[in-house]
Image 1 (spheres, one colour):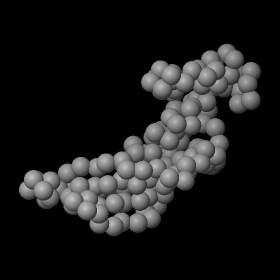
Image 2 (cartoon, helix red, strand yellow; image 1 turned 120 degrees about the vertical axis):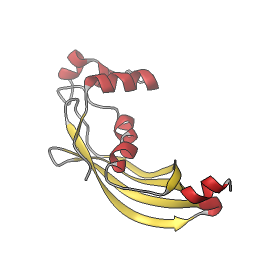
Image 3 (cartoon, rainbow, N blue to C red; image 1 turned 90 degrees about the horizontal axis):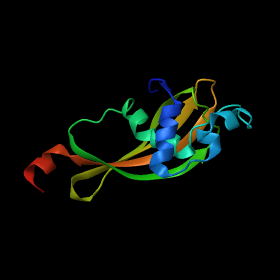
Length: 139
């Protein structure tokens, strides 16, 4: 499990700016207070974007020169993430296999859980790691 991370309104607002997604449920605190969740909620894609950072707290990979996010599969948004809530990720290693040109493919399953026990988001993330020795030799 990763450490707990609190979602702030500032983080949600910055994500709205970066993605041009200013839906009121995310950024209008007064209107959202009267809405279905009683508060603003994080964008689903903001929650999803935390996969890499949260999983890096759990999965230690050494001896690599580079990591490349390759793919995200089986994404499900299961519960809203209210602003102010804490979340963390549980990570399960699904597979490791060699790939061409010195890469190793690592597939993990990630569940982002809220402090109330509900699962906010699940996904499978594939990362390609370049072997440190091959990168240094110029191959």
